[in-house]
View 1: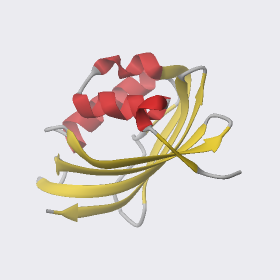
View 2: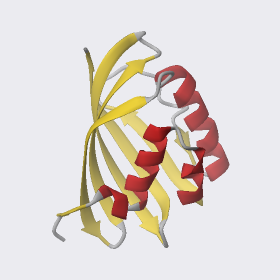
View 3: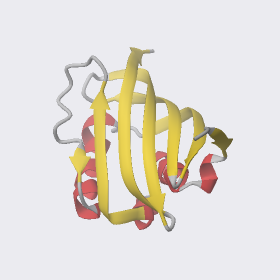
View 4: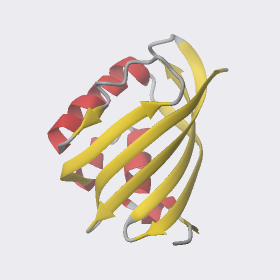
Length: 135
């Protein structure tokens, strides 16, 4: 298997991220009913136990809470690099800037997302937040 760069907008995850950044709730139309979703933080004591879902409905609750607690002012993409891994799998390097509600600070954050899509719907999402840096 070889990674190859791909345009984000050509992938379900890229479209979901674009809609998330825009605050567009139609992003759920791109999510499988039985999505497997989780966000983890590398070497951070943040409680991420609530940042997981196994259904579209559960993901709507997670996204709602993310909007209130983490991204109350939204987020700005500083860079999105997408790589196709084959068989519907993608790796995304997502660099963003946002007002972090829980810390009440402007930050940048670099995350890596491994995702899978079937028939244009996102059905697997694992995000690892690697850095949160105050601006």
